[in-house]
Length: 186
Length: 432
Ligand code: FES
Ligand SMILES: [Fe+2]
Image (cartoon, rainbow over the protein chains, first blue to last red):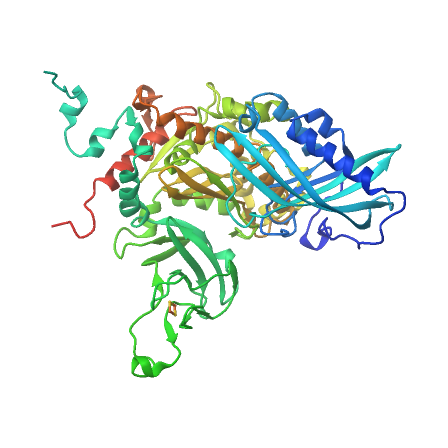
């Protein structure tokens, strides 16, 4: 791991790092949608192991505040997880004593407006597929019902023939306001 | 015929409503649920005492401004051309519209969108269109609303809506030393709160948060899930055999003083969960700034202090708690940034993201407790909340402050003492 000693060594922000290039070859919209629906279902059903297994080792799971957010290394975000923190988060919830999710929320979400946006180079120099989609989730727990909505940007990669998730940035519509506890997988 | 017999304590104590509701070992559930009590709190606490609003580093340049909240008041924190920080109430002197609609920016003046009145960033009325309707220019002795008193300590900006009262330094009292401890860990002797704010909507009365912040009894239970999976040693600091103390600092402020534990280990940077060789530049900068004393500062670490009514410094995080209604508040949280401590700053951002805010692996669970607590106290029986833990083993430290063990409710009792003092003070204009 690189130690960052000064602000001058700040890596580029992950959403705009590099440039958006043409959609890489070999991706069918239908396959992409099926993957996104599966990811959504695993999250809705609190299938933590199944959901975690979708991620690549260089995963970034990011939920900023204030629109698209500022640089996540220098400003706070609701979530900014790398692969190891995703794993910690899953381990915590699987203890059954992560009270914000114990009992777990009841959830169902709709994903729509799925759009292949282009390709973006990853650290290994390959091109990941970048996708945008809108979503709405109805969350129900003792606190009451909460309607969450926003736009997600995903980056997908094929590893050994399997589609995997390398990047997920969730921009909540109401992220300029105070939001309630977000204990589930958004 | 049924006679209603008042309880023994009611007969003995008599006095005001708050003398009955707040007793040495218990407090009444309606304190968290009664809208008339909340309305009275707004008048006697939030509109009167010093309330934490923001930090000077949020408006670093001349003419910077940022919208903030002071309880139910929408406030604009501005820095004028002389560099002075103001807290304007976001209300037009003409017909009461919100003047400033951007969240932050840089401007020497604000224009109300309704009829175009303009104000300097000090609140002074600069002008109004078609001025003949007022007999010419500069005829009106009006301006935007202002928070009556504004003061800062180590860059932390507080406002009081009361024209008169104790000074900020009097209000902070012993809590000043805790802010100093935090700032002492910044090699350049200054902290910044410029890493943005998370906003966590919480369906709970604000007092549950204020009480919980230095409740050393809950961490092992509420946070056992994260301590367990990360192997964090934090839980032990709040165990039954911890040498840490809970201290009531007076004026409603309280702390969990973890220094006895860290002094025992005598390992610099243990408080931050690291070792000097992993943050060599920071350690060198601290030695340069503090010489001989650097090791002590890096061993003892940052404070864990709740400053009445709404500023919580949790080592490397700062919380600003603002009430919305009797059963709702917002927790604003951010990562402390040390001037001259770049090596730690990104780590503090990263740790804060992991810990606090709506998805934080610590605070989401605290917040779940606050919300279940709010639902719980709406139940009819038992009517009281017990705050007696450790009352029998409290002592007074060398500075005259009441202390209990790491898990005692000493901080809460200090909170309620001060709360009662403020709530039994006469209402403004009713002193006669
Ligand atoms: S209300 Fe602001 S100018 Fe009329
Ligand atoms: Fe806690």
